[in-house]
Figure (tube, rainbow, N blue to C red):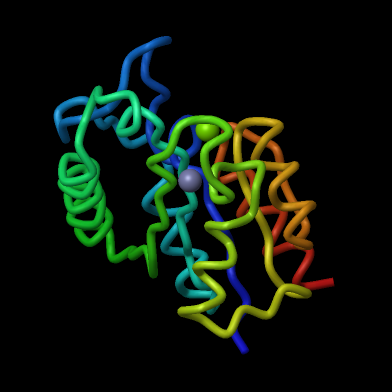
Amino acid sequence: MRKAVFLDRDGLINRQAAPHHYISEPEDFEILPGVPEAIRRLNDAGYLAIIVTNQRGVALGMMTLEQVEHVHDYLRRELGKCGAHIDAIYVCPHAQGECTCRKPDIGLFLMAERDFDVDKGRSWMVGDSDTDVEAGKRYGVRSILTKSLSHAVNLILAEESI
Ligand SMILES: [Mg+2]
Ligand SMILES: [Zn+2]
């Protein structure tokens, strides 16, 4: 079994878009300071790094799933330059109330469970909004509400060393 850290995307890994704006191009995707290093620390400590992200801009017709994938290819390349990697990215492209994967529902976590043997007792959810914490709680992992991934990784690694 593998321990995992589930990561929100917007507002944690990259700068949040302005209200009613959606990040459809790599040019609009600004990775926040310290994020690649923080993800590398998770990689080195043996955690799966798994992004779970709501992207309802797809359902609203503001961007395509293909554009979202391009943005994620860019993220993976940038992380790779720092020796960091994401193990998987699960996206909810649906509008509110139309699926069971939009956080705070836990469908994205269950998709991850299909692909990885997740050890929930040693896993975490990190995000910058209440819906992230709610999703983590519903799924059954410890959750951290923060805008600083480095801060969250400090907490996770400190907890492990106790
Ligand atoms: Mg967020
Ligand atoms: Zn969904």
